[in-house]
Image (cartoon, rainbow over all chains, first blue to last red):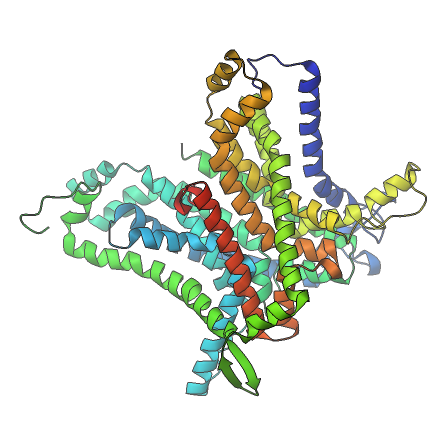
Length: 284
Length: 304
């Protein structure tokens, strides 16, 4: 079925109806979450009791809004802290990896490339528990040997950062490599001929060319870190990032505050997503 | 460069060989973060996980090496039935996403152009930039007893008392399909985009019908996309925790839930590690078989 081949009207319209239905299915849960963030009721459910902004700005007992709910604000801060570190680390390592895989030929390259892709096919929960088990056994060994405490290797933010970094780096590597492959090496050679040092040529010619991919990968890393759940769940200590905090609240029973947080998350993620797309567009 | 050996045709050879000593150092500097990352965060942790799964607790701080934890898994019906159930539900999810997603991908790739195409594609993408927790929360609000759907049906008079739509297998499937369908649609759109319309026209000219063209031209061409979509969706469903736990409730019996219980609630890391390794084994086996069947490599499928 393509536009140039005529089809019966019934078929065409039922196909269109299916596509429409599908997009309704896609939009339904998110729209409901957003709408009920403005419902003047203590339950995130119908009937509609009237419009309110209390779930964002409210300060009085049942209607405590997002901006005054201390646990949520703290969780957002924790998430931002984690996301910043994950993004910086994974982009740095991803850039090195891109140069390594695109610019160098060495024995075992193919094997290392496969290893580099592996985090994509390891379920997040497994990644989490394996890092948890390993970090704990290292901590035990070190503590037995030295008598000191190694809290950084116990569940907590450092492990959360390492756990997310362990698979987000693969995405950063792929995005940055794709851009580096399109780079014309004669530009760099020209700089070298004109007397630039190797590092100078990379800094002034190659890195600016890579910048859209580096920024794009950084944005994607922030997005993935912010919404990661599976790996984080296994490594989290006493400071919960936002998704874990929301999960705990959800298990206790929900109020429209969760809708309000979700609405903010939807807006921020859509913006970040569009941003990363724009950076990828400027590649071409 | 050594004398006498003809230079191999490597594209970046000249740039590298100009400062060969320095670039040797540069090479190791580039290699070290990769090795550090893969060894300390991927390889050693998984070896460690396997080692823990092979140690049986025989007393306080006393362990023996053996398959005891795996034996527990096979001897306790709850455990292996949950494993089989998780695998079966994931296969069902994969099949459903393929059947539901294929027409959408085809529509986006072949029946729309220019701005409409971009818009539809973006509309598919946006829900997946949003946290899985928010998406699942949306389904909870819709499906629970006091939820939107139940209230709506009461309002229009289709039912007399509220109905609980949550906490059953259908709810889990709806959530899983929702969560993973993008990963089916994107590779399908990419492969279908590369199918030349004239091939389909030729099929019609030669007397093909809609179904025979689908079977003999479109599907074979889309096979790489179908395989990579299926692999990713199966993996994501198998390793999912949020959707089955929140939409399926306490009796969702999802294998990642068992792993969580052993690790965090029961603090039985030995058994939990064995469970983890079994899940990893199944997931890797499916990826491996999928790639072998479609004669593709991991680099092509995952590396995009």
